[in-house]
Amino acid sequence: MLAKWRKRPTPDPAPEPLEPVDQMLRRLDWTVLRPIALRLGGDRPSKARGTGLDLAAIREYQPGDDVRLLDWGATARTGKPHVRQSYAERAVDAWLLIDVSPSFEWGTARRTKRKHAQELVAGIAQVLGRHNSRVGALLFAERPLDVLPPATGRHHLLRLLARLREVPRRSEHGRTDLGAALSLARNVIRRPSVIVIVSDLLVEDGWASAIGKLTAQHEVVVVRVTDPREMALPDVGMVALEDPETGEQVWVDTADRRLRERFAEAARNQAERIDRLLAAHGVRRVVASTDADLLPPLLELLDRRWVVAARRQASYQPRPA
Image (cartoon, rainbow, N blue to C red; front, side, top):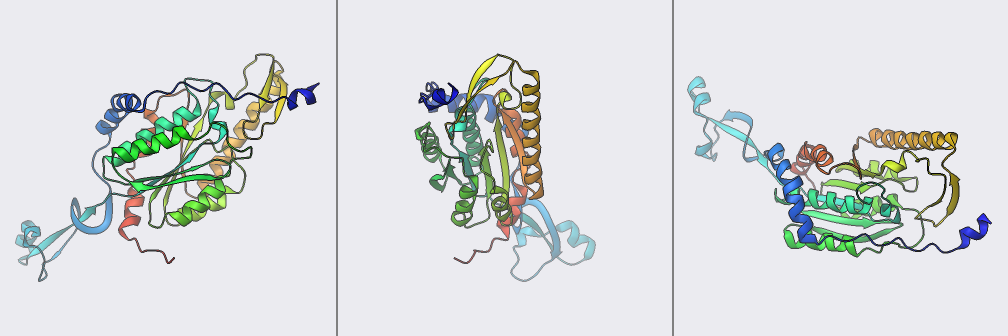
């Protein structure tokens, strides 16, 4: 009987009502972006010497130096003219690698993971855009689907959000291939950048080595989008569970306490394994749950203000083709 039930086609889930993009951006501006602006100040420093406010060094004046940079205190103390050098303020390129696989249609709390990810992307892109950073995107599921070159401005942001909404709710059946997306990103992104991976990391194995190669040149951060029911099953009796990426279905009895305990233990082990793999490659991880507000994970993500990436960009050397 179960085999017959598995062969029955499963209808696509009812589409989630879409909030108009302009309305979503206005809501995020008041609930997320303004609080972030109050918490975060300043721009990113770099090792490049140039116009800026952060002092890098004081050295003796040399012919050709800008006399406006004279440090009169050091000059008076030493009896020789000295100039101040500052760290240049630079914007950085940011790339968003966005998971749009069918597993993102799941959501049991306030919203689906797909909608949560869209709002995260909108918030990240707007904060970076205000600092003149260019934002690019790479969308992926069972394979890389689309690449949007980095750009700035509201028109680019609207195009990115529209592309996210246009992605089919169900693509080809198959496991999400993060490794292929990371390999493509390594070939496409030519200059040191900040790479933010927005995914639930319910993906095929083999991505750890690919992410390790990216960290050699870029600052990589993972925003893991989760849902509470992925960590614990409720006691609701017999239910049918389906893998949204392969279509495989199975009946489980959630009234079985031992089954719920095994499920919770397996979920914890999976999360710990993912954290260990990311930590081994020096990748920072931020968790964004569908039952929580957007502000805390965004603050955690943006609080360092891309310091490492800006320093790498300052010493950027083009990679041979």
